[in-house]
Length: 480
Image (cartoon, rainbow, N blue to C red; front, side):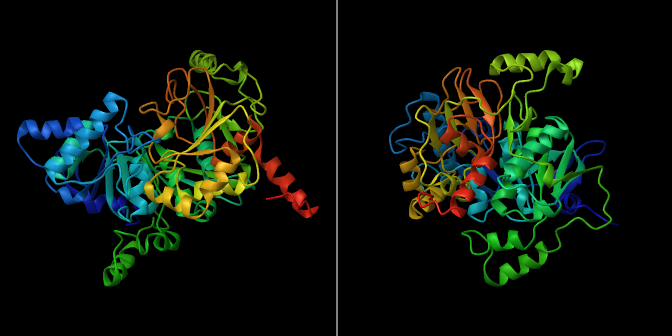
């Protein structure tokens, strides 16, 4: 019988099904961090039990950590206590911790792939909604709650109801200046922030296959933002080339064995999906959000919907969102002033993201009234950026390269956007207060964010790319 990629992996991990209830699913890798693990460890300690299989759990500090002066004690008391609790709990239970100062420290969904811990065909969970990132490798990866973190620590299993499966096909050629972040923001704008509720999504099509692994991670990362349980992409040669030789990837003979297994991980040609969506890549332009959920997005040349374009049942929440954002129905997005630019988060903080931004801003200067933070996703990304001279390009452009962490993706650390200020952000959520109390967030790609940093306003990066090409063709010697 023909099977989807999701079904193939799910079936191999089912321990049993509770009669009339959920499945008992075996978990291959469990990632933890300082925010959702303290209560889980407290539960274990209260029951007098240890982590069942500590070698299958990996910990890092990311949400609460400062991105300036990381070697100093964390100033915010709650953040400091949570990071210290993670260190204590991992030591007591024999869990590997990549804490502050460790060369592998970083955002949990960045370090898993770059270290080769994330691999095709496995099940991965973490007490963090954006665990779906790891699905880019052809894995079943999803976020769990604190009580479930405790369950996995205690049993290496999880009670789960099997979701439906959706396939989203993106075929064709992307426009210049359109990148993976634009693809996923476009999809969410089309199906809404709840359009994939109850589903696990597989992304397919020629446009998806053409993407690098880091670009695929961006897409899978935001699956949760349309209500999906998770997202995944079938592994291929791009996947295998990315993983080969990484710190915890299989080596030598084991690599060949795993490769043979991984090549079988795809949806059969006649597999049936519960829902299927088809998108033409050429229809996607650089995207920008205007509201307070990721589904409230438009192409950068578009406008905020007018009241007549909004469903009657949604008008109250729509108006509330625009009131928070300080925008008017029907307003154009281009030309809107921004105060901060944040390039980072588990969505867009990898080396390719930093290279993309550096390549665009080289030889340019940021707008004088815009503050720009670039936060690498890990110590390894930070190290590579410095080795490649990316830090110097940012310094010359007036961008601040900070230290690794979740940073201004969420107002849970010292990096907060001031109340009332506008931030164009490469992160994944634009909820009210997400980046700080009363902060206003526009979600966008690294390229669109970089363009806004230079111009000081929301702009169409395609126009800037086009003018630069014209300058080169005209022999402009000032082009860098």
